[in-house]
Image (tube, rainbow, N blue to C red):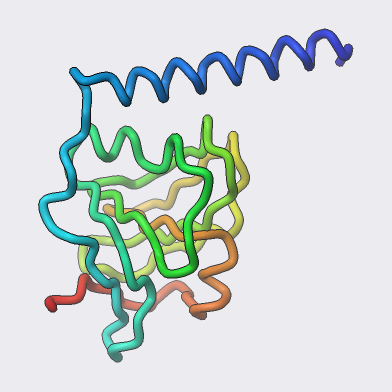
Length: 151
């Protein structure tokens, strides 16, 4: 690929990113703040997987996802539901994705998904997005059962 083509593609991506972020920040499409404060996601044995998880369970927050963010902290995550697949188009950082079935059982763990990629899992009904490397640090693996902390 020629340098001018790469430059055009890079400029197009920057332009689209600006347009998407501006559109999402427009007063007519402002997202309401989460109804509840971020919750914790825990395993059945009580060990914490994500200390501050925002639940995106309506169309606009799910559509926005992590767009416009420069990263996630180690204790932060986003639970998308319903969702069986994700993409990292227009994102600026890699993420780990934990695909969960209806009962909260981990179906698949996709590690370090770089920007401009997609991932899915058969049977997944929700997806927990974490900072890249957190799944290894928290030792998440298929078969673990996760739930939102009731507290």
